[in-house]
Image (tube, rainbow, N blue to C red; front, side):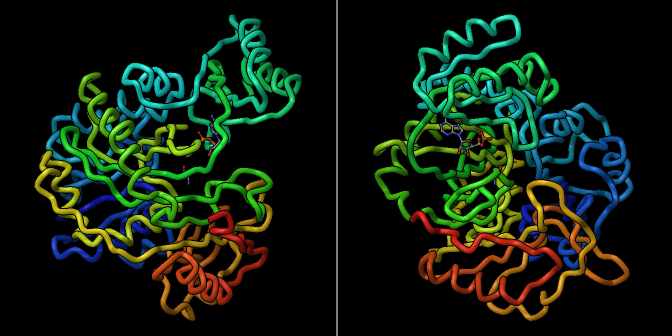
Length: 423
Ligand code: AMP
Ligand code: GLY
């Protein structure tokens, strides 16, 4: 099989690493890829939203399967683009169609979906500029903190949580009246604050059947002790130690099943990953968000725990035969620690030479933001390299990840030294 993966982060490197182990793989392309994916397949200089260029490449190279990493092309309808094209429609795409991708593309759509299918989530109401006075009244009747969510995609920055009512009102004004997040904040969802611990559940569905993938916990803040600005994710652990049988049963029965059934009832075509962000409040989990893709860096711990041939898994999704697949999960814990550029998640420099990659032993190296420059591997993003390790528990796995992170260096390199601190 000739496979094209769209994306350029640690998630796509982890997917490429796993696909490269399949005896069914004939040729692997990654668009645009990074210095890590370049070692596993061919990097193609095409952007993930350049559908016409993707089409030309897929046809010219007889690609048999396309796997979409990030949300953008899904929300922009890349899967529909394939289905609507005479030459492309027979080529399976892993990732939901546009209508279903709205679960991530519109927070309001996701909330309405959860209400319709009785899926536990925070109480909410959505507002526009025309209803801003109602929003003030709504907030005055809520307890702090106030959770404001831009409806549309805002590069992971669209959720603002504030303790002070006046500051929250000012934030709402800047979102609704001053387009703080552009068109993404013409509608804002205001919701109840859920006080608890976060975890994520990953589901793979073919639109009829589903498989639960390993759980993971991500560390989003830049600073130790979960302080400072939000990032894309500074590290992850799988499985989540507190996700015991009772919690997983509640999640599967009251969240996963109604989600997959809801997609069918609402006629939302879905062949791909569903990433469900949860907060455990007391003994029960509630949904804070849907993402229509895998997480990054969660993929760097979830994919290494899947024992099956990944090409076979994706074939089962494409053919709606996931029910026939016996998914095998590695019992070990996997952890990943992300190294990032100095200044991230604010502004940072690129093209810093990365040293020490070859010295890494007993860990997997997943490139997130790297590229080749004159035969050297240099930084090319905020998140640079994730170091994934296995262990009998998260402490043992983290020990190995940190031992190897210490061997890496580049100008300004930063990482969190406390992944797992709250477990
Ligand atoms: P999101 O961009 O939807 O992932 O939200 C960013 C972060 O905001 C989440 O990871 C949570 O930590 C937090 N968050 C979102 N919604 C809520 C909520 N209703 N209550 C508490 N925290 C929330
Ligand atoms: N790590 C969070 C995300 O991928 O959205």
